[in-house]
Amino acid sequence: MADLRALIRRLVGDREHHQALITTRGHCPDAPGEAQRAAGRVSPRVRIYVACSRGVHGLVDDRDTLEPDRERRVDIVEAEYADPAAVTAEDRLAGRVPCPSECKGQMMHLLAEDNRLRAPVDYVAFLDDDLELRVSDLLAGAEEAMARSCSIFQLQLTHDSHAIWDVLKAEAPSPESPDPGDPVSPWVELPFVEVMGPVIAQREIDRGLLAVLAPFRSGFGWDAYLLPLLGELFPDFRPGIYLGARMRHVRPLRTDPQRRFSNGLTPPQEEDMLRAALLLTLFTPRVLESRGLFLAELQRQLNGAAPELLHGLADALHSVSLRYWQCRHLEAEWLEHQRSGADQ
Image 1 (tube, rainbow, N blue to C red):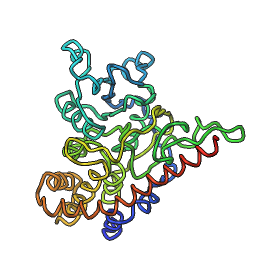
Image 2: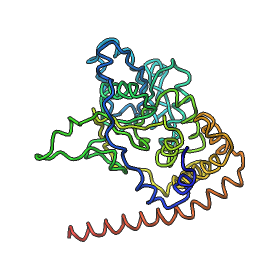
Image 3: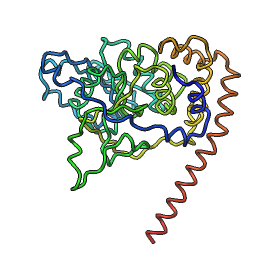
Image 4: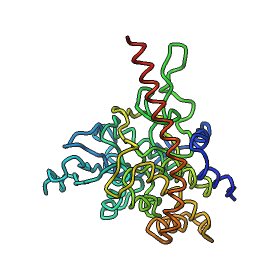
């Protein structure tokens, strides 16, 4: 049984303390992923949604390098967000869909709805347009994930990627260190994966993991709070990083904490709304019996089961969050001032 007192403290308490708890759980023992496939194990069926801006993205489609059976098990859908009106009927037949969205959280929710209309698969990937990676690497990660019954994973980021969480990045290579492309184990567990490139088991989408994003735009809090909480509550929910391949996040992070979306909320306010709903869900009887029940109740809370209580609690949490984000802003300004002074 999870320590509810500790979970509540993480949801309510200081964000920096919470972030310090987001660490890897160490390398995992080898699973028979490659050996089982070589012995005739069936590869997972994978659908890859890749965001694109006027048709441009960083996914390298190298399916022609795969064995025929593995090649047939990968489906790629381009999600056009910059100019959805440019998607023609022919584009749709070719696997390109319009996805008018303000940020990644809304995009994942909309694409999960599109996924419901398509043939079932085992894993669904949701990739940003500025991620550089190969289809073959993503499929290899899904095969390893299936061998480990992992519900959600991502590829390890290159050491030079733009990212908030250094724990997701490979170490920079050095002459004294072994080749980082040859890790001791191809897998490591940790409490979450980022929204930039998650690969999610279809069964988790069916349970409502992305349905809870319906009221939101940014996805703030989905990775930092929701996923770690699910891992604490349900032992079979074990996010992981596949170390057997890398992806590179090219552009600097662009989500402005001051930006106000069409729902009237800023990204930090969305995060605090999710935190408030998680707290109310924890206090609801019997929801810890299954992940499906927990996610259904979370969705009910977010959709207005007790709106005054939800919004009041979110406002209280946000009063604390504001101080954190103001400190981050002042810290960034000070660092920029220091750099400017050093350049003169």
